[in-house]
Length: 110
Length: 299
Image (cartoon, rainbow over all chains, first blue to last red; front, side):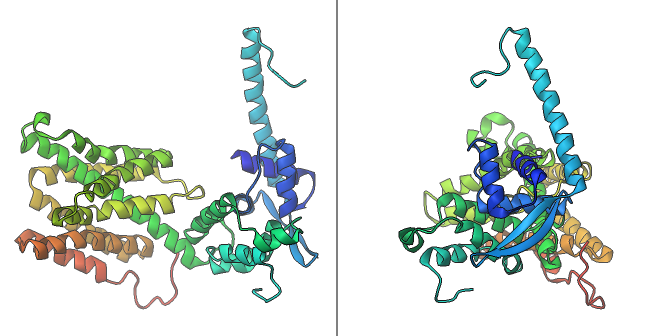
């Protein structure tokens, strides 16, 4: 799973979001590191919908603009869960190695 | 859509979105424009700004992925689009197999005709690029595959530096690798399906074996290649595999161009090449689907 797909799944896990809200939420979650372009966002959404991990939700028109919401499916939740488990295992292993060298795993921020 | 009340920026974004296929735009254009223009309310901005390079690049990438879609990557993709994407990928693969054939034949000829490595110019090492590109593509290292497949094409551009009939001829002979390079770049995008590596390894082995034959006896090797192309085309037709059939006919057309040019430019009419040309013409023009089946079969 790409980092972009992972972040989109994560922000959709909270609540159904429309495209622009997804872009904002991903930027916020990644602390400004990941700014999704529209072309990239739809590539990721198309893939998630085709794989059955996300689906279209309601539509609304706000200030004359169409907003289409997307939500996570049950298998999307399971996929996110599996990815989190995989990443956590990696983090635990890396932290143990760093501790072995007498280095703190979390440098910089508290 | 396209009304006179549109601001310049919106018009520019809508123009940019025209690179996307119509079936995709019908579904997504309004939604995408909404994101592009979200929170942009400054009059000066709405009149004088242009879509940024990053956004443009991302939309172009999306255009390639949707025009040459992989069936699994999108929902509600028209059958024609899936068909087009599969043909481009199959043609890229056939081009790589042809590259393997020529590379093997070149290696064999270095030892049989030229008597060893000392007699060969160092830059001809570029001809071995298919040995890198093919396994790289099968193992999913697509960027490496594209770079390696592009190396011979790059050489042809360098050759163009000295204009003249020889440079032009060289470029024409590079046509298959240039087209292969383009097909790999366009067809094997991020959402392209994973390749059946084991089955394709057999095809690669076949191309290498043929290349050995081609290296030992140039005319016979090429003729054999032509015959196999015809055989594969007939096989595809019988199985109703229109994608493979169409890819083979384009592949044959690519090989025909240098062959015909060679005959015209240097007035060379070798029997084996004439037979090969006739076979290839047949591969190009024969139908890919049975006439009785009106509905296109896409698998």
